[in-house]
Image (cartoon, rainbow, N blue to C red):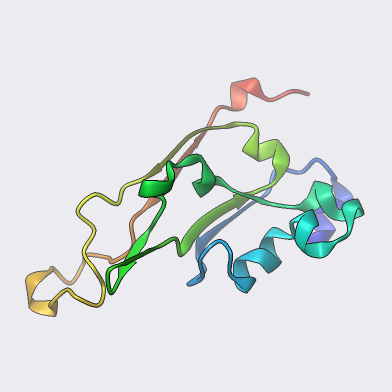
Length: 127
């Protein structure tokens, strides 16, 4: 990612996936590179924004684990791409608890992770 920002400081970058870590945990913080974590203001333009923050806090979880709602799946984007995000949704209604669910009560193709869906409006792109 450093090479991308070195070549194009205003690059539109997205890092997506199952981090197996909540937003405040070290793996996500390392990838985000937020200025408050790096203590280096020169890197602020390279920091990534977690788009799940656009979802209301009570719905901001992608996994239920032993009754705890966790946000383990993330879409982290550069500031230019974050400005174009117009739809962010977590489809976690009816999500089964990965610990408390019995294997025989679910279909093998189901996931215990809720999809995090993001829409971008590229017509607002400047330049």
